[in-house]
Length: 74
Image 1: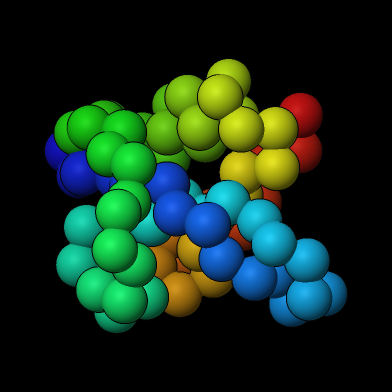
Image 2: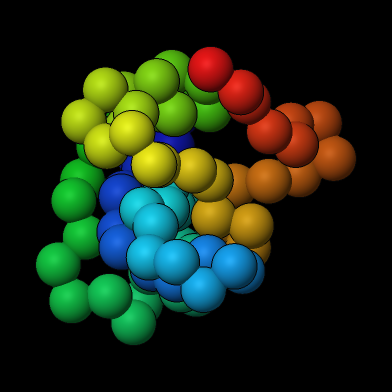
């Protein structure tokens, strides 16, 4: 299990977006008040939980995207 947070950031296209970060992400250290999602078992469940509150939520490209899990489209 891993702890996840949602934070506001700027996407590559320049628009503000909400990103899901894993605990220990270097980008998370710069955020003052991240929203804690809790300790969750899977990345898919994490993204579903984040999208239930924020429609524009996506994974942080620095800590949550790896070779086994690139993206999810709902």
